[in-house]
Amino acid sequence: MDNRFEPVISFVRLPEASPEEILGHMADQRMAAHMPLLTSNWDLAAVADFVAAKEEGWHRDGLGHWAILWGGDYVGWGGFQKEGEEWDYGLVLKPEAFGLGRRITEKALTFARQDDRIPFVTFLLPPSRRNLGALSRMGATFVEEIDYKGATFLKYWLETV
Image (cartoon, rainbow, N blue to C red; front, top):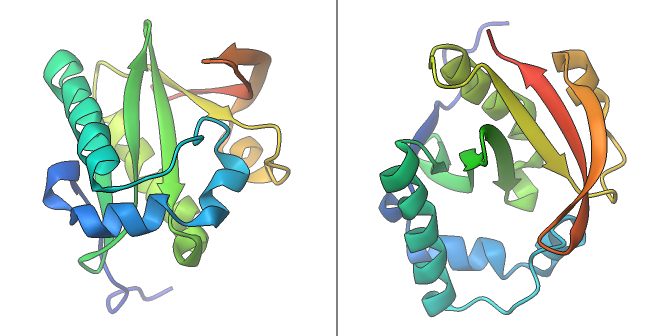
């Protein structure tokens, strides 16, 4: 497929994204359907707290979540977050960008494969996610059902080396 004219996916630090864009994304009621930890109402103060918390990961671990741009437009956030000794990969896209998930994840996993700190990644998905075939096709394997911050998640594992 010739993708010379397809918009470029880029990862930038969250503070580079518009707080209003993040607010519109996270305040969208459709987001809560697959985000069991999304329990509070979002406003600009919540966005500032969220961005600060994600930036703390960068300061602590040297890696964290990005704002994800498609052709320069904000389409969501995601990346790698240290959970104990494991790097967890998460991706939260705006509903209109759901179809970009595979391409964004492939780009992020290419990044992970080039980073010696990340011999494998984990994925924590809520049980409400039914279409998990993409994880299997990538080579991820189911590990277990876990409790994380009071919510149940399905944990998957993928080797990156």
